[in-house]
Amino acid sequence: MMQNLIFVGGGAFARELLEWVVNAGLPPETSLKGYLATGAADGPVTMDLPCLAQAREYLPQENDLFLCALLEPVDKLIICRGIRERGGRFRGFIQPYTGRPRRNIIGEGCILSPKTELTSDVVLQEFVTIQSFTGIGHDVKVGAGATIGTHCDITGYVQIGEGVFLQPHVVVLPHLQIGDYSRVGAGSVVVRNVPPGTTVWGVPAKKVDSSSVVV
Amino acid sequence: MSQKPDLFIVGAGGLGREVLVWAHEIPVEKRDWQMKGFLNSIPSALDGYDIGYPIVCDALDFRFTGTELIICAIGDPQGKLNLCRILMQRGARFTSIVHSGAIVSPSAIIGSGCIIATNVVISPGARISPFTTILGSSAIGADVVVEEGVTISGFSSVGEGAVIGEGAFLGSHAIVAPGSTVGKGSRIGARTVVAGSIPAGATFFGIPGQMISGF
Image 1: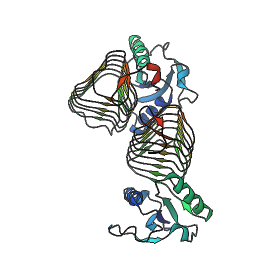
Image 2: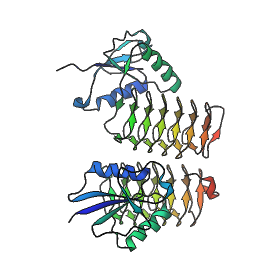
Image 3: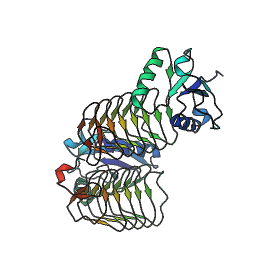
Image 4: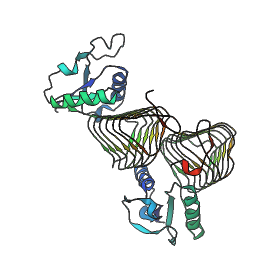
């Protein structure tokens, strides 16, 4: 059966994902159909694919297969879950450079960028995005929609909640928990649990006003 | 079959020796040069190292015929830029060394005389100007503009759309947030977060980064 690949989002990350997908070789009987826009945040440069519709309005067709190309966790959860509720199916993307799966559980629509590494016994829920050079330690659990930036080190047994955003170069020490919808600023070293809905930043990471951390 | 042009590495310090290693890790059939040796002002710079290539002479004493290629392996941006511009005026032709372990988007542009080390990821639309050095495991985001003569140390992240001004230096693990600007000749310390705009000639260090007078 022919499958039509659709990117959810048309920003810079979507263009990167498009190149990775094409370089890895499209599976047989798969074609690139287009992308779904998510509004002004996509910026002036658009994808080398047709824009099909606004992501929040698109009605999935029978042979559509979606790829989540968004980074902002709340957007991912609202938009991608909405598409799924309207009958859409998501596929994930795992770069061939990624370490071999070792009893890892990877949820629907997860994106693992080039040169990420999952060690063992990792659980990623749906729509998790992990960017280049990030290492995920053993027994780590990552909640739905979380985005983990480049060069992060998520050590053993860490639990990352739903909708969490970790900016680049964050180190999280073993066994810690990062609550749902929290954000951790770039370069932070997290040394104690982060409550839900909190923004922390620094070495060691401390609670800050969310506007002081620029993504 | 025509012979491949000779390649000389300008600078026989630590970076020069590293560049030799990276160049030799490029498969022979993909090389458009043959290694000849080093150009360095100190004839004894390679004493004690079993390199297998000589220091021919000082780069400023070399008579360029227009057939040979050179690559400048000097880390300090201003010294590199000054020397490269003098050698350009004397008819030197620069090549770039892109390690085969780097992932460079087909839509990224890399100027002449660039060194791209192992595991670097360069995203779509990025423009890397001549004489730029990007060291191992750094991630350069989509549409980033790196001006001439910049040195980016290892494990750095440059977020999408950021601009790194001419002759700037980024220490290792430096983080430049998306859309930020680093002014000409600025120096960004190791593991420093840049969010916003850094003026020309500044020295910036810490999380969050602060202006300091020197390292």
